[in-house]
Image 1 (cartoon, rainbow, N blue to C red):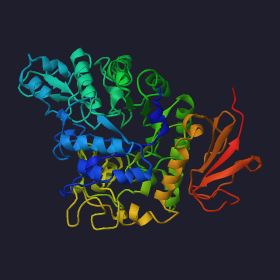
Image 2: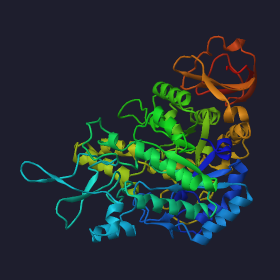
Image 3: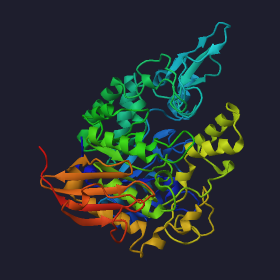
Image 4: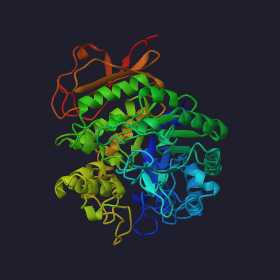
Length: 553
């Protein structure tokens, strides 16, 4: 696949509650987004992706939708949204919305009707199944599937004999039944409603998991991998549904679909998704290659191997290093004290790999995780609390260890309010207003105002790499070839016709030698995250060169 506009530009993700507070209540909103459009335009952003802004009880911060057709009052009104569409259009910026259709909120009118009346047609909008009984007559769930957020994937229906409903995430997010044609029709109506308002397309939440092929027991898996996923990840029914949606409503409106494809999809699955289904997609493999089960740091050796596999096997990946579900990239991928240089190295990689670059708000200024994390009582993420509870209740782990695991798997660090300037409210909110989640102390250093006049700052480096890729057909469409180096270096070339770029990245916090024969290559310096050139690659050094090379047939 590949819509040209999407291929040509980076996508900037906005987590609305944490981006900009336009009405002074301490929570980000649509007026806040509108107020920062000039900021985004100045960065060179052409596509923004809004995490969910629909009506929601916000148990999972908008990924539990109560009403797909209206704006959550927390974020504003439909008039605010219409104004956002007008203002983005003036600036040549397109808007991508989040589409969450694996599940709804348990507050959705469909689910309320399904619960209150077993004979309602809405009962078949969800997955209700009779449970089992063991040899002693005790009730058991229909199968052994586990939620991605810990615990059983089944919730008992009160007042009904041994009846359960499926939830791959929290019990407040019941799964839709995609075997029901009516569900597909409802979702297509939702898509049409927003695209007719001018929305460019959708980032589709956990879209690789919507179609459950069977409800048999799942195989035993290692801790962290949900039991049962082999029955619902990247099924043929899933591919058929996406082809249908694209044909019915996306292509006629000139839109795009971006898929979040978790659950352990393979490159072979990814190839299928790019055939008349998705324009690009996210996989999780490059985000989950930790040094070990306890570490929150990525093993760059594992990362390099996995990245090369995805880049060489799949034509057009969605490339990202952080988002609202992930820790900040400098905390995951960078070791030691070289965080600013490391942040620039990550940006260099992001904008020169083959595929669409996705930037998460704050990444352009080098935003960090909280220095010591938030105390549990200040954590809002349901995952943080469920992991902590699991560690304490099931494994009887000490509080400190439980909190360490909760922080590693939780998402609070990524959701700190955005920092634009050095004022008391960091440009996120008005002075004296308490933000919905406490400000990150690093905001004093890593904000746009503090960096904008420094030619060596992260935000000015971000502008350089974004401008390098903008309209650059070699970096947009050129093929990618990885050169043979040791595990400490990532070295690749992007080639289109007779022109190309060579990128060389030190993935470590150690000095390393240039690859053998590097000095003999005829090349022209284009970009680097150090001001000078040394005889060796310094920690997290990134260098980009223009080269001439005939493209292999």
